[in-house]
Image (cartoon, rainbow, N blue to C red; front, side, top):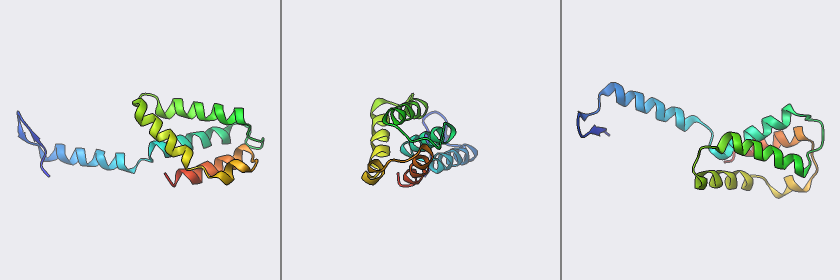
Length: 114
């Protein structure tokens, strides 16, 4: 595939190689949903990992992760990523009480699926 520019004609091979390299870098990144879960997991491991995770604690953790990862994206993109992240969490995860550290492990595992 040749990239063309209306003014200059065909793209310079060096520019094309640079675009290909940047595209490969972007494709290697985790999805936004995975990044959201990974950031939440990081927060849970750095703040009292041995304590039980409360509903309030989960809400704060998710809000911080959302603010850090999804800020600046269009609303539709951010909502889609958040929905994908939440749908990766199984019902069994919600049913059992776990510590913040255990939740972090589960979130890291779930991030691999989205």
